[in-house]
Length: 371
Image 1 (cartoon, rainbow, N blue to C red):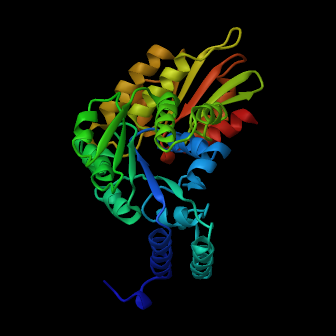
Image 2 (cartoon, rainbow, N blue to C red; image 1 turned 90 degrees about the vertical axis):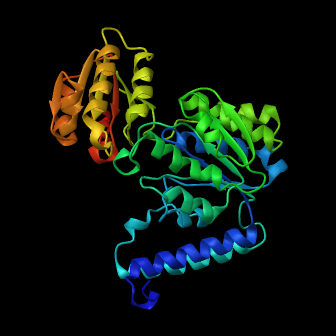
């Protein structure tokens, strides 16, 4: 490896941020709760944090904190630990990199003060390539590991579902005492995950927010949070932005699930659309962008999602090249074109689901319909 003095500003700064974050973890030794899975990481993290930051919970476990925004990949994990709320990639000039290094030092010093750092840290761990979860697990040393579910995500790099199990299972293999594994059980790979856990394994049923709430209840109870406080906290949880977020836009109801997508999360979103009420004369409309990083099976997975969409929605709209495989009623090459045309395709009373991978940039469609 090159000497750090000769490396680019970004790499040099990232090493310093990582160093300060590691120092804070080693000195403060919080209980780390790591959360991963193909679907539902952010929603689960939000539910767990809601329970653990309830005033009654703080009296029991002390201060709790966790991943802000979506800083859940290897480069941004040290920023999450130090309490930043901006992505590393946004620091794109030498001056900003050096400023980030200084801010990381100042934040680390503040974290090292008495009471300056959470006693319980809830961290979301995302991955797109083999070895990333193992690296992050070694870095943060979680005592409780949560795997929400296993599904076909990032197959372009992880290969197949067995590869997804190996990658997500790295969180469980790296647990330190108390080494508690909590697994969503409504998928075919829960036994394979349980076999990788070094300690106690608990299983939770459900999908989506139901699963997230069940996991939060289990963690809260294990840490001694009163049941009344757990239920009060869960009753106040709001949907995370751009994750099945229901928005009233005039006489339209929008389900904004535009942050990302894979076949499993698409199925959940379409089930949610199918169960959603519509206004008088309204329809269920699915606006579906492409799903990225699915590898050789991408076309088949898009076709299967399209078949479900045509069963559960009255109108299916595809966005992006691979979205042709949905067999949509209308198709647009990109989200901008769809945003321009969609106001003429929807009608009062419609319930409209907007979902696609990050690369499909579906958020602009939500913004247009809200406007």
